[in-house]
Length: 153
Image (cartoon, rainbow, N blue to C red):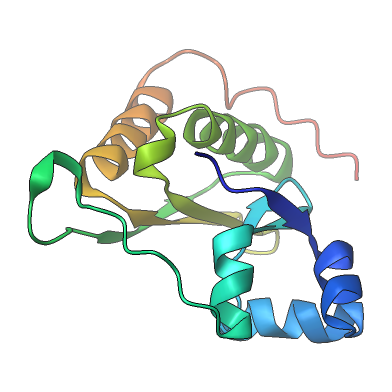
């Protein structure tokens, strides 16, 4: 069963907190959230974890006793704002259409001054490898996806 996702405003209203307080919880890691576009979404299980309710333990895929989680940071230099937006959309769309059992947490950040993008990936090894292969294919290929910078903004 898939968790219901809440907006920051819905969580703030539900908990009787100010929206800025909820965003602060997300920034400090006290509340897990996924950034989709310019908005955060909070899973019901993560909201319950914040409020102290017990989460039912999920069995590990394939009956394995432990779960492997990978943390990866990909840094891309020399990428303009428009290309970074396109790449961010591509990666987030790929992650959000994948297998719900292998959820990844992905965050993208672009530094306009340095023309540098960082993509932070947290999740299972196989799903992380899929995202890294996607990035390799997009960045390594001469497909024109990142060409044609039109940074007017």
